[in-house]
Length: 226
Image (tube, rainbow, N blue to C red):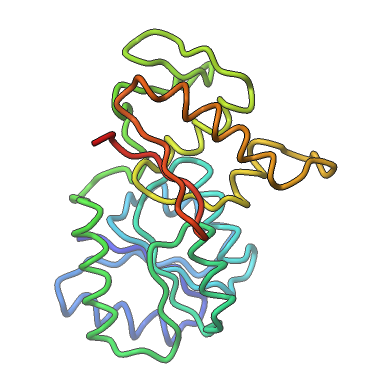
């Protein structure tokens, strides 16, 4: 297992690196938010431990950009920001788990291994979304979505929504994040407008193998239809 540790505190980074390596986990370190995405892409980790208070770029910004790029690597936030609001914000941004400092090393290791098991990660995976999901495929050049090789007829907003969900199939994407992607820079649009786009896209997916699911209080996810 390869773990990317994004932590700017040198003492904490050394302590965690030694603890994980004693447990047979390979650790790649990064102490700067601005370089974190490059290190994430180049190291291809199976799991990421992410601090929030980073120089260069805040940890939530790092996470948000990674998820927007379609990177599905499991992420655990490990930070001193431990309020309920901080945890909700972290999870809604795309984290898979959240552990406040100080913490027990055995619990941290157990949670890390659980994340990797649930994700089905294996060594040397890219951490990106699969090329296809239930027959749906995003063309890397045009950005269009194809169903079993045929282009889907979607509005620009439906396309933006579907692409965001296909970046993390099986994972909830926060409603606020989807609104930003579907209505970029449109401050006069009501928040409820995202529900209209969800409704229309759900109807277009009805005859496919994918199902658009609403998770109350969390957002939306795409999963294989039962």
